[in-house]
Image 1 (cartoon, rainbow, N blue to C red):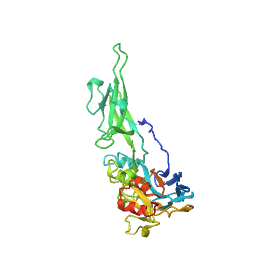
Image 2 (image 1 turned 90 degrees about the horizontal axis):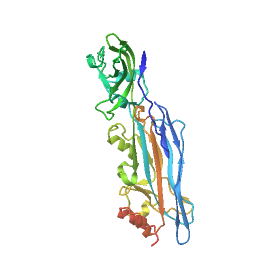
Image 3 (image 1 turned 45 degrees about the vertical axis):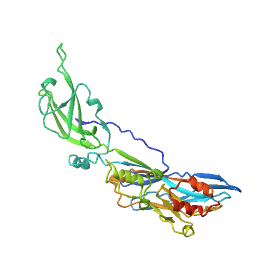
Image 4 (image 1 turned 90 degrees about the vertical axis):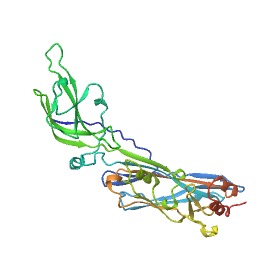
Length: 359
């Protein structure tokens, strides 16, 4: 009799803002929704109406090694100039490699090509359930295993014969392979097997054992104004860096999501006019500042140009990945008082912005 112990997993799918959604195995796809942020600013003479302007080329099948156009600029459709800055928020969710991917499980799992499922041991740790071993259990009707099936465990629930006679007792069985010593302690691998039962000797034999391995999820969020990546790290996904630094994903997500820029500088010149028209990344607060004014009826040069999933992103770790990159923009009037309200934490930046301001 071929039997399988398993339960259906619960999968939660979050809302996508700018989402890189990669399908199973080596199939990749991208879904996108755009939401521009607008700032309306009243000045002495007119109104600035500033928003995000983006160009996005959606691929039919986005694969590792392919660069996707994603241009981000700021446009002023009002009648007054403004100062602008942008930052990013990220959300990254990945499917972990099968938790049983180790010496005890990998050969069976890979050969069987099984899909992950979630299996919960809760019903089998309560009153009445006991583990069956190769040693006969006299208190439970003498039941035993024909052989050791490690790492599979066999548990049973025994109903003893009735005192009135006529009953020989009965057993209910559950088999699983616990994943001990990992981040998945207490979670189980579902087992499929062929079972033979010798009712006279109360011996249980298992054969044709295969595993359905639990595959978990891990996620990380990043707000650049809180995480404040270094100037040398702005080409990396901050959320991916977080996953790469913490168990159980540590070491498996090294900078394969890449942000590519143009018109971005990480150091200011002594003369602000030399930097005009550039975006300056300020590591003190995690914002990119446009050096100069966003004039009415014009757009800034694009600062973000594209996103790349490097060809080193293997399907073991990057398939079925969700990546949300949200661009957050705000703008202010071109006055020195308004620049002070930004609290950039960077005196040189304040001086550069003030040089384009009214007194």
